[in-house]
Image 1 (cartoon, rainbow, N blue to C red):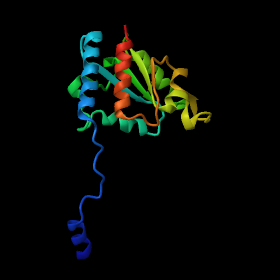
Image 2 (image 1 turned 45 degrees about the vertical axis):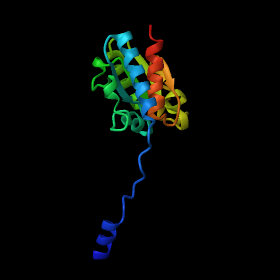
Image 3 (image 1 turned 90 degrees about the vertical axis):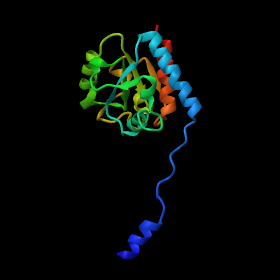
Length: 171
């Protein structure tokens, strides 16, 4: 037992170093999103994330937006707990039959103007789950979608670029 304890103490960390985001590019993207949200909405952007049946890969990337490396709240990006406080619904995964009604209710509970962003290949066309007996299909088959962010899963920078494009497109 002592042998393993000494090995554990002398061995370095077993994890890989985190990816190094390009700080200047990230700061520029974040500031562009904040500026666009302030111009279009007059305030920061509130996002409600909805998992409609995904494998959680997209959720991990979305959650990375709030971690210490990206920390996008510094640019006014906020995740909210209720669709009643949201401007944007980020929907991931193919819509399962069990989540169809919940997604429709969430969409209806979100005040206008609202945008729906389908995140990931599964949200776009069902991905590897297309044709499954348990899935309704793509998000656009259940609620109107304003933007698709493709990828399996899309990384946080792609998510940020998509949100900037969404806010810029908004009239």
